[in-house]
Amino acid sequence: MGDDCVADDHDRGGGGSDEADHAGEWDGATGLHHPLYVADEYVLLDHLTRGWVILGVGAGGVIPSDPYVVGVEASELHLRFAAAFDAMMRLFESTEPSRMETEWLAMREAVL
Image (cartoon, rainbow, N blue to C red):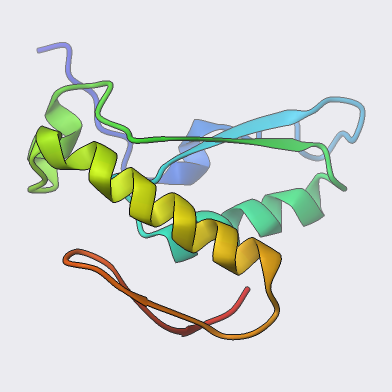
């Protein structure tokens, strides 16, 4: 059918992460994934690659079936992305526990 849904973010990148000579690229579709998990996996990859990782974020939904498969309306992706990006920036910029609640997202005492 031509549709593809990547269930595991580890399948998206980080190839060659054992070689610090090359930057690994990893994307987190924050409109479809919880921002705490995206940020946490990025920090892990950053550590494993000794800083040679690039995080790409976006609303997701490039493949039309992805939002449908997880029960998200495509029209909601940009609003979800804005909230998720804000949550990730809070996590990256602070060592204090972060708290945030939206219609679709809850973070309680979240820390990286």
